[in-house]
Length: 230
Ligand code: NI
Ligand code: MN
Image 1 (cartoon, rainbow, N blue to C red):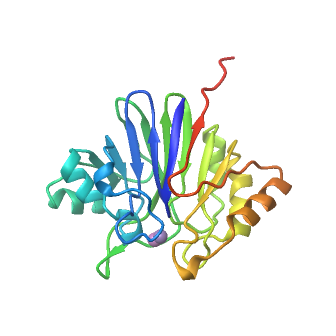
Image 2 (image 1 turned 90 degrees about the vertical axis):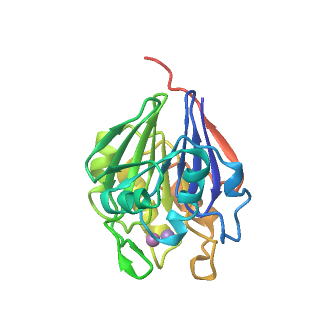
């Protein structure tokens, strides 16, 4: 059983049998965060792009725990310059870690730090204990999401719905149709005034289009049962 815990905004902790993956740990300064960076001990930290609400506390957590930050080339190198362990990859690549595989896909967005562009944004498919999870990062709707749905039999897709900076709820329903994941969990909403979107209304429209959806409150977790062997 893989468990996934929502930490607010786009931050998730994915825990498998032999290791854990933290994604986009924006906790300090996140009004909805229910954990402190000091309470997390991941093996790997995936960062979708350099914006502060995604890079977040990554470097501090990596410094304290020795966790490896995996991201696109320029952002990983920026983190390496701070003295933490990193794996620099890029879109299209797969990184084989001992307890999971991570493949990088595009995201249609931007990536900058302190007002300077820093590499390109990405999304991730994490395959852990036979379960495949797509974390979309910050992205607009774009047609090639369908390629990800064709390549992976996704158990779960984590999709932004907050609009303004990313796809909004209607586009996220269309993205869900392309990704064909068994379950969708919405993210990147409600944290700030500018992205107040009702996740339950999103789930309702997704259900009407035949999808399954779960709204997690920050701090809540959910188990993803093992696939039945066929
Ligand atoms: Ni962003
Ligand atoms: Mn963001």
